[in-house]
Length: 70
Image (cartoon, rainbow, N blue to C red):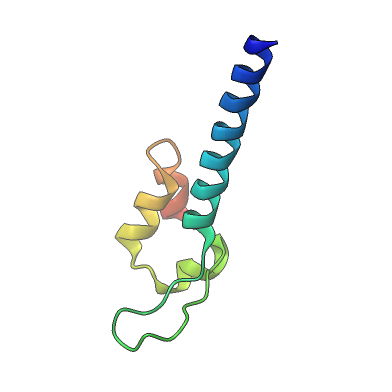
Protein backbone atom coordinates (compact mmCIF):
# COMPACT_ATOMS: atom_id res chain seq x y z
CA UNK A 1 0.00 0.00 0.00
CA UNK A 2 2.79 2.45 0.88
CA UNK A 3 4.68 1.81 -2.36
CA UNK A 4 1.51 2.49 -4.37
CA UNK A 5 1.07 5.84 -2.62
CA UNK A 6 4.68 6.77 -3.28
CA UNK A 7 4.26 5.82 -6.94
CA UNK A 8 1.09 7.88 -7.18
CA UNK A 9 2.87 10.83 -5.60
CA UNK A 10 5.78 10.58 -8.03
CA UNK A 11 3.34 10.40 -10.95
CA UNK A 12 1.45 13.46 -9.68
CA UNK A 13 4.66 15.48 -9.33
CA UNK A 14 5.73 14.42 -12.81
CA UNK A 15 2.37 15.40 -14.31
CA UNK A 16 2.48 18.77 -12.55
CA UNK A 17 6.01 19.38 -13.85
CA UNK A 18 4.94 18.51 -17.37
CA UNK A 19 1.92 20.82 -17.11
CA UNK A 20 4.07 23.71 -15.92
CA UNK A 21 6.56 23.12 -18.72
CA UNK A 22 3.77 23.21 -21.31
CA UNK A 23 2.29 26.35 -19.77
CA UNK A 24 5.58 28.26 -19.82
CA UNK A 25 6.31 27.14 -23.39
CA UNK A 26 2.95 28.02 -24.94
CA UNK A 27 1.64 30.90 -22.82
CA UNK A 28 0.85 34.22 -24.48
CA UNK A 29 3.86 36.53 -24.64
CA UNK A 30 3.95 40.30 -24.57
CA UNK A 31 6.17 42.53 -26.70
CA UNK A 32 8.94 43.97 -24.50
CA UNK A 33 8.62 47.37 -26.21
CA UNK A 34 4.89 48.08 -26.48
CA UNK A 35 3.47 45.33 -24.18
CA UNK A 36 0.88 44.13 -26.74
CA UNK A 37 0.24 40.41 -27.07
CA UNK A 38 2.45 38.76 -29.69
CA UNK A 39 1.17 36.07 -32.06
CA UNK A 40 2.87 32.68 -32.34
CA UNK A 41 3.85 31.98 -35.95
CA UNK A 42 4.02 28.57 -37.59
CA UNK A 43 7.13 27.36 -39.44
CA UNK A 44 6.01 28.67 -42.82
CA UNK A 45 4.94 32.11 -41.57
CA UNK A 46 8.08 32.78 -39.56
CA UNK A 47 10.33 32.33 -42.62
CA UNK A 48 9.04 35.64 -43.92
CA UNK A 49 10.90 37.43 -41.09
CA UNK A 50 14.22 35.54 -41.37
CA UNK A 51 17.21 36.47 -43.48
CA UNK A 52 18.89 33.83 -45.67
CA UNK A 53 21.48 32.86 -43.04
CA UNK A 54 18.81 32.27 -40.42
CA UNK A 55 16.80 30.15 -42.87
CA UNK A 56 19.83 27.91 -43.50
CA UNK A 57 20.45 27.63 -39.76
CA UNK A 58 16.81 26.67 -39.19
CA UNK A 59 17.07 23.86 -41.76
CA UNK A 60 19.93 22.14 -39.96
CA UNK A 61 23.22 20.71 -41.13
CA UNK A 62 21.89 17.76 -43.12
CA UNK A 63 19.52 19.72 -45.30
CA UNK A 64 21.41 23.03 -45.62
CA UNK A 65 22.23 22.48 -49.28
CA UNK A 66 18.65 21.66 -50.18
CA UNK A 67 17.48 24.78 -48.32
CA UNK A 68 19.88 26.94 -50.29
CA UNK A 69 18.40 25.58 -53.51
CA UNK A 70 14.88 26.75 -52.58
